[in-house]
Length: 391
Ligand SMILES: Cc1cc2nc3c(=O)[nH]c(=O)nc-3n(C[C@H](O)[C@H](O)[C@H](O)COP(=O)(O)OP(=O)(O)OC[C@H]3O[C@@H](n4cnc5c(N)ncnc54)[C@H](O)[C@@H]3O)c2cc1C
Image 1 (cartoon, rainbow, N blue to C red):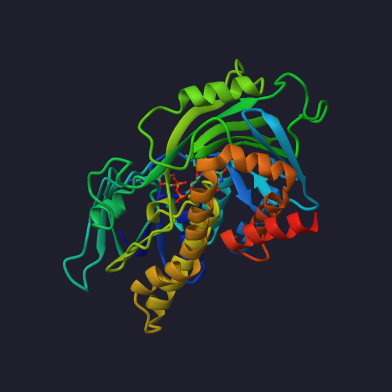
Image 2 (cartoon, protein in one colour):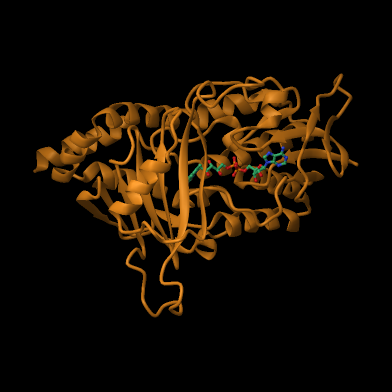
């Protein structure tokens, strides 16, 4: 069968791209290797600014939202930041991703789960389509979008990433997460969870990273993220982190499961002929916080706009997408890298300083809430100095 566009991977990046293309009148095939709904190892923290790029209301798909962030170091020295409006919504990745995929299907996308792409055959010339091979047969598409996550087969096949390369060479961090049930026997609402509306971020459990606890209603997501390539397992740091918060010994409802964090910020080509990469496949994870869902959704929307423009004959080339991402996404990720480079090697000292003056933490949370759309190292330092001088 033949389509205007084939999108590989039904995570937030792929479903957003597919949905927007279908809305623009293209015929779209969305291929997902797992059975949906599928669990993706993820904290599920979706920043409120993501709604700028979504056609669905995050509160309708979230288990909880963030009104209080508690920053700690090895379970101690808490800094509490209270907010007057949610900065982050906490979703379960199975239900959230399913909602996005269903939205795409309702817009006319041909969504096929349990259909892994095994091989991508690039076109021989301008007239030929891409062909993707799956156990259910081969499909042809004039355009191809690789939304197939950190290990992207599409990106490797098209030569946009090295074909065989360990995570270290691909510049990936990693994270390990488990979802832990709370008071499984009590009916919902009887005993509000102590984590309700709250997130804990602990800068102690790993170097250049942090541990988190995010409230998800009757569950919490607890995990550790390492924002630098790492050979050793994160299992021990996770166990110690859970112990520090009294969560060890709870049998996880899901996980622990780990995955790569393909850090973004470096310019790289994201187009090859009539194909593009989006989301984790395009290496667009914030190298300071590990946030990836916002960038997955945003890059999906940007990619769809460029593809739809090409199809209409707007004198656009898919190479525009690489330029658009460089202009609209990478500056913020480079700022994040600079913040991380300054912060993580001295995390303990910074934490002590932030106890005296937590203004930069509030600034960061407001930035991801939306409105200003960016956060910058300069902004954080300015906030720190201004509030410190005011006393
Ligand atoms: C432990 C952990 C915690 C995290 N916590 C957060 C957080 O709290 N907030 C946040 O913003 N980000 C977080 N991230 C990052 C976030 O999970 C990713 O950035 C995000 O999922 C990227 O979305 P995506 O659509 O690009 O890729 P994915 O969500 O990985 O989706 C890719 C999809 O492609 C499918 N696929 C892969 N190969 C094929 C194939 N050959 N054929 C067909 N389908 C294929 C996969 O099954 C998958 O469904 C976390 C990451 C980890 C590892």
